[in-house]
Image 1: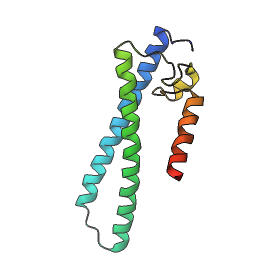
Image 2: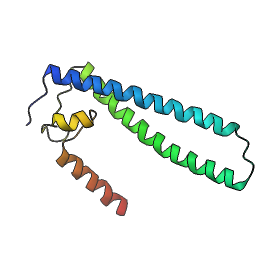
Image 3: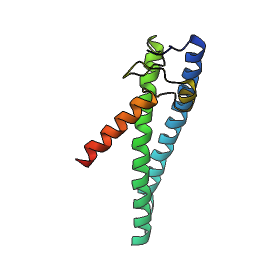
Image 4: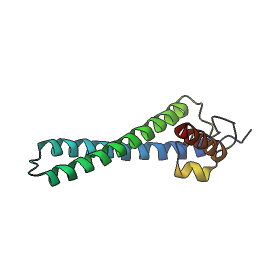
Length: 127
């Protein structure tokens, strides 16, 4: 079992989560505005349509990733507000390092468990 974060560290993680949440919400608003503009565009030829479709497809992928990250951020914030955020892996209770949490404050798993889960996901995709 790892060492839980102290109040100062949890406060730092909370600030990072709130900052990242605001950035993602801004990104999602921008994507929504671009899609409104795209639907109002006068696409004159197949090239315009293909370029717009490609951009839209890329935006949808980005939006899915951003929504998933936002879900994880909200999960971490709920744990902080309820006093249940420890900074420990949700799978094995090992410590998630502050170095990792500063880069990815919504991380739920230590590196070993994350790698294990990623490998499992790849195996399921291959089957």
